[in-house]
Image (tube, rainbow, N blue to C red; front, side, top):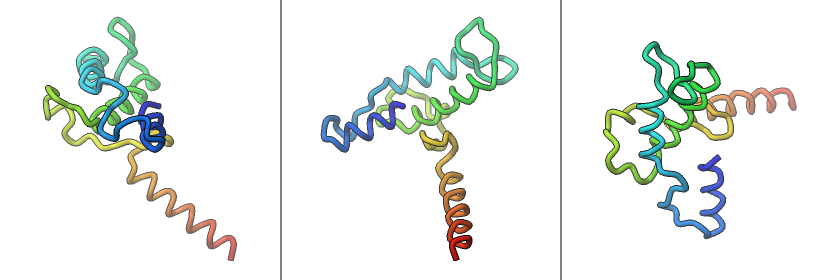
Length: 112
């Protein structure tokens, strides 16, 4: 939700465009140091088991944090290859654009 709120506040002039509403290095640190399990998957917190919900949720947080403005002190290898996730659909932007083009073409064809 933070990227959505941040976009709204920026568009209203209530937040500078280069300011993040969350501490991205802290989020990345937590996800990559505390939430990972030795056998794959991500968990809510240490001591808990991994599950699909928290893995998906953590990967979304990882993608959002990796695109933050302030990443001082974050090792580059932590975010190399991480792509931005669409906060509405929770998939990478390229896939959202492909799906919208595909279904837009189908709706146009049906209307004719």
